[in-house]
Image (cartoon, rainbow, N blue to C red; front, side):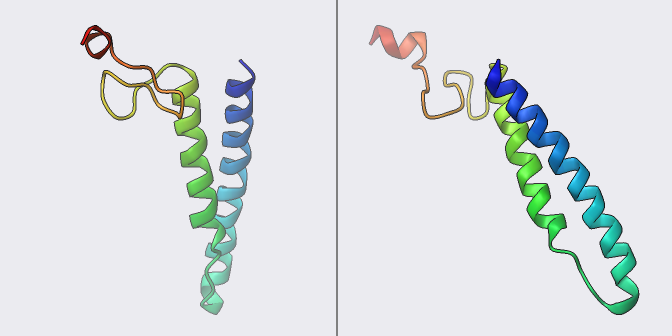
Length: 80
């Protein structure tokens, strides 16, 4: 439950600052500038989405393994 709260708060923070970076880039375009926060906060938001998905029991790679370092083996591989 704590992991879900953490990932949701990180996602909200990333979205806020990503929108701020987009606004800054639009404002800086007249001077030829680019805010690199667009890339960094997009990456932060993507990682928090993956963390949220993993905490909710979603699957990333295949149906037999869960996300994360504590992957569970599938039932068929446990029988072998």
